Amino acid sequence: LAEPALADAIARIEGRFGVHALTRGDTTERRRGELVIATGTSIDRVIGGGLAAGEPVAFVGPPSVGKVTVALHAAAGAQSTGGMVAWIDPTRTFDPLAAQRAGVDLERLIVVRTHQVALATAAALRSEGFRLAVVDTGDASIGGIEVDDVAPALAAVRGSPTALLVIATARGRRVAIPTYVFERVAWERDFDRTVGWSFAVGRAHTSDRALFCLTKDGALRDLGTRADLAEIAV
Amino acid sequence: VRDPVTLAVVACDVGAHARLLAALHAALPRIGVMDPGVFACDLAGTEELLGAPSRVARRILARCARAGARVSIGIAPTPFVARVLAERIPPGEIRLVDDGRAFLAPLPLEALPVDAKIHDELRLLGLRTIGEFADLPRGSVFDRFGSGVARAHALARGEYGDVVRASVPVRRIRARRAWDDAIGSHEQLVFALRVVVDEIARSLERDGLAALRLDLRLDREDAAALHVERTVLPPTRESAALLRSLRWALEERPDLGRVVGCALEVLEVEPARGRQIGLFAPDGARREEAIATARYLREKLGPGAVLRARVTDPHARLPERANDWTEVIA
Image 1: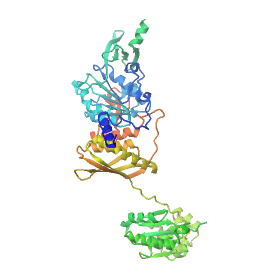
Image 2: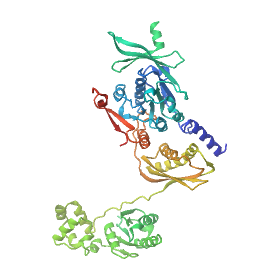
Image 3: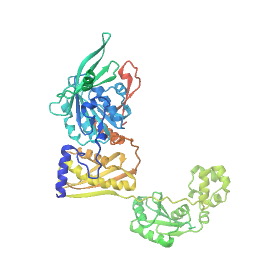
Image 4: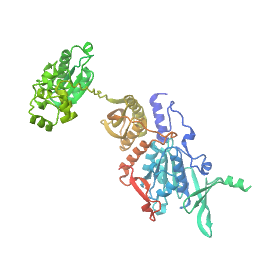
């Protein structure tokens, strides 16, 4: 193969899938274990080990169900291996106190408050400085953005050393990224007072779910997966 | 033991500094820059290799004349005496002194590198020439004036063998490529530039340097050459970071035309610094990469967009009092 033709072919691949899509022969292939960000909760078993670098994932569910809390645990997991996290926050709703309670090191978290979400996301994905980029789109009805607004940055995900996590209230209409649905299961009550709620996370068309309980102080209790509970019931 | 011999070159025109430095580097070892337009070369032990100092001086004079600079050359046991000697002779001449103290003795005190206040004090003591100052007991000078003037006293005696600190000649770090087929897309150009950037990164690594400023020239088929200048912060020699910086610069230019060649040069360098990496951090521990991205976003989005949070009071009643937000890039 002539060199210009090869260069052209490689440029096409990189143009479509990102500059990290191809590696040189002398580059040691990264082990998958190095690329996966484990949240340390049972959601890892539903997702397939954790969030993987170079892959986008969306957490979709109604407001105040626990998406951000789980995302914060993912951020803490990304930082546990020494990584930095970019949190793109167009609605300015990032809560540092909740992040700290979830175990996030705020020194290694950069919050980007902008509506130019695609620009910020693409920059974070192209940089080799972040393990995880989280885009909290917020509720579109109260000033948030749509998942589709992240679409221009998705070309930079493939091959990036950064995992992309999009938090949204509704699925995108134009972009199709692996989506995990958050559903409220029940309200937790104590002496007739509501003290929290439990929620389930899983793919829309599969039965496997990770179950959590959020208590009034914002602590996340991991209840295991549906399969675990079935075993206990038996 | 080699006899100390120093050759000092003093230029009439300070503007010729760079040209002279290049000419001297090409001819002599251990060139030190004393001041703009003033150079010193330690010739100790080079007689067999280069010839007698006076012969070397003649060669240097001719070389400097070819470089378009008029200089005078002094040869003496110490750099200070050689410099004073060269400054006191007309351009185009060479003078050699064996006894530095005897040469300096009749010269006025102003030739010594000390503060004007010290000059006044020495004059109040009735001293007029360097010789009179050199005759003072060393201990008394040290006790009264301190180590700075004691050093000048040693210079006055022609004793102080200050070392010529050689300056490393500046090496141009550059790489260039020409392509048979013109490149029309950004992605393709970034891919093609990777080879050039890798070459630059290898050169930087060899010299233990990090690039601070880059200049990229793109030769275009249908238009004049395009120059792109980038400041890389923090300075780096990592190929990925350099390429990313260029990629961002190119993305700001929507129409690059058809590029048929490029030349990448490092305009400014800094000594490379080590980086502490996390023990089990394969990719994401590149804090400086993250900070570089934050800087890029700060430039793009303006102030108040790229922030770092800190919890100041976890028990505050109002959420805005619980946190403190600071710019990542001030």
